[in-house]
Length: 590
Image (tube, rainbow, N blue to C red):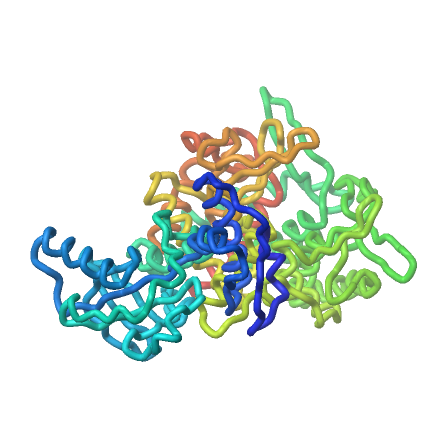
């Protein structure tokens, strides 16, 4: 059962789930109930399951919904002893005819209409309309005040009902409100909603002093890092095309190079070169000549009314290695060319290249399609789609769709954030790119800013829990399987995962224990450039200490197990993005 069953229901919908039979075994019944509850939660419905099931099935099913029907008894003060407290609780349960009773004190009415109460253990509850408050805290409800509920209204068939009794002593409690369908069972009541849990956790973690914003610093050591990263771009250059080897590795004095390049990496190369101009790493005229050569060398596939760059080309002669079209990689290239166009010396070359591309025929319903070997594939459900919507208007495609933007809806920031996180979960592992590249190249959208907050908070929380410093991103590595995807993975049991191909199988492993867990060099530089603070400075320090390969470039990354460097292994994307991050950082210090 998935949230897709509920996703198209509107407000006011009456929903019935016909369950023929639930397992007798409580553990199995609990599992089924959790799946139903999680699906309803994810759909953010304003309605709930109704009592259309046989009584016992209904009781066992609804027991797993969050905050299921309870009675809160508000007392002026708690008894001083445990014995007195337990005796009072037993009296309340007997008087009300249900075990679902919580003794509380307080009862302050908040501006949002909710009651704020506190248990004997100091745990606070807000009782009111169910959902999330403006500050992201859950609100339990809806409330039925016992003094206002007529006897005939007592059988309120709502699995989230909260009955509030105000009493000086338990002996004065009215028994006119019966137990809510008797559905309070002795099973765990909390539904693990990973998006909501992450929102609250990130909000708390972001208050940590190590995440407080600091003034960015660009010093001599960072300038040396920029010079090293630029040396990769120079050493890997192909004279005929201006392009660069995408991966370089040296073993025992022998070089092993990858000469195939995607349009993503072409974009990273151009953007890295533009950053080098800004950082004054080489004469601007020389860099501009190379960028013009790159632009002139890029092939274009004519496909009916459409014209687009291919998926993969050879860096030595720009010959096509793989036909097809990758929308995400194209967005990265477009971002690079539009930024190059802002330089007077590159304006004509940029305009000529973009004039060759005709992508209107690849658009369908506001979405840019991928062209694979045997089929057309929508690029909508990807973490790159939002980045595309920021870039494609430069090519006249302003009516583009973003799953982030469409999910980012709700009356409060909390609701919008949780809805966005559900979409992130649906798409899959969220890496540092293109999330932070949007910051560096385009400025953050509201969706980007929220996800960056949650991502950073989650990394810090992981560090606090495990002592492991993360900098996750997709990365080439120096051993089979050669390339891994890693990042934030809301939809799996473990939050940080690494994914890679093993033959035809796609493997997911916890990044903390996988032999392919990587601390990404480019991610560390991006995080400090975008969100300078004590924690991201710690990430940067780790990269500066261990990822430098003198005379060669910045290493692709470090193995999380011991933070050992991928020795003599560097790649174009990493070094290009490191240059971008450092140029952005220097710009912020002016």
